[in-house]
Amino acid sequence: METQVSVVLDTRREKKDGLYPLKLRVYFQGKAVLYPLIYDLTKIDFEKLDAKRVSDSLSKIRENIGNVEMQAKIALNKIVPFDFEKFSKIFILDNEFFRKKSKPLKTELFKQNIIDDIPAEWRKKFSIFKEISSGPDFISQIFYSIIKSLLYQARIGTADNYQTSYNSLKAFRGNVRLSEITPRFLKEYEGWMTNEKGNSKTTVSMYTRCIRAALNEAIENKLMKREDYPFGKRRYIIPMGRNIKKALNKESISKLYYSDIEMENQQKAKDFWFFSFYGNGMNVKDIICLKYKNIKGEFLVFERAKTELTNRGGEPIIISCFLNKDMLDIIERWGNKDKNPENYVFPILSVGLSPIRQFEIKQNFTRFINKNMAKVSEKAMIDKKVKTMECRHSASTLMKNAGVSPHYIKEALGHASLKTTENYLAGFENNQKKEFSKVLDDFKKTRI
Image (cartoon, rainbow, N blue to C red; front, side, top):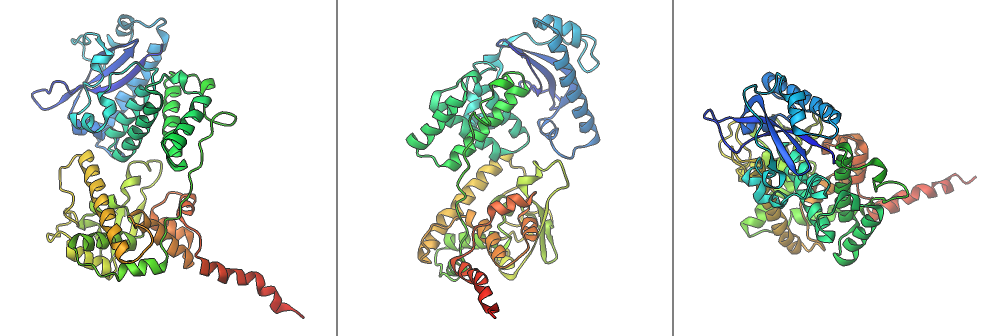
């Protein structure tokens, strides 16, 4: 069985200065040993290690512990069969990055040690952290590792998707071994999702992509052989989700805009819906994270929260959108009266909230908008319950149908590629199709 190695923050006992020790954790055959490194960090600084920009001191620590992990893996592979005592003598004893006078912690059963470094807030929200691990060759341990990494990066929404995917897989066959996930297994899983659970192809696609990422991680960690990989041609192919057209036409948007609203909650939901719409389909998280410093004259200038942590291979994607009168009126109605540059534009978030709490507030506020927009839609006699998702699709599709350049729409939406933008764009309206069809009839005008 392969060994696993990672650097963790041992938060079981806080030091007098408020710091916690960094330790190299080595796992093998149900046991884990923690070897103390020379570094102590706060929880906040440890989370910052995965950030795009860090201080010079943290950058140096990140570089050193990355080298320690890499060199540890090389040393582990040379010890066959693996033995903790041999590893300690060969790698730890004379290594400048480990405390000389400190002995490694007593070997502990992995089942007892697995949740020690997981914050209580994480365990409360993500049920996978409450489970007893069955070992590294089970699918739960791979999802555990991925979700934990995402949380350290503050990518709460993505971590939530992985937890939901794992819950679905577990409901199908339980916490299976990696070797059990074969092409046949995945085909049966898809059939169970669609036939018994009534899930859409889009949901199947989302969940199986998470499983694919987990198995890629398992191969990278040598927990699974590449030849046993169940995805790909002549194996299991992830179904394409249906691209449901979510865009509203001009008539429906007009009905929403001019609808008479009596209830304050409905007016508030409608205002934030149109703030998103006029902001080129601005995401709810981006709206509630706006600060007054993001207002630059007549424009809102900000970096999309969704791409801030994921677009590390290139320049940050900065979005700039014009603040029209409706948006300014909405800010005046619902915005913070104290316009200090560091204050949030809207009093929905407050300073000092954890990423998980921010995520929960965003979810609740999105539900608030959707619940009340359903009532606004009904009053406006629109034949669907309008949600926040329609803002983005409607804004991009209306721009497309008006002949706006796809490259501008890509920039307005904050997409990294034009292909992503094209997937957002719904088809043309029927009356436009009729007009366009006349182009094919133009040849009749040239009859001699």
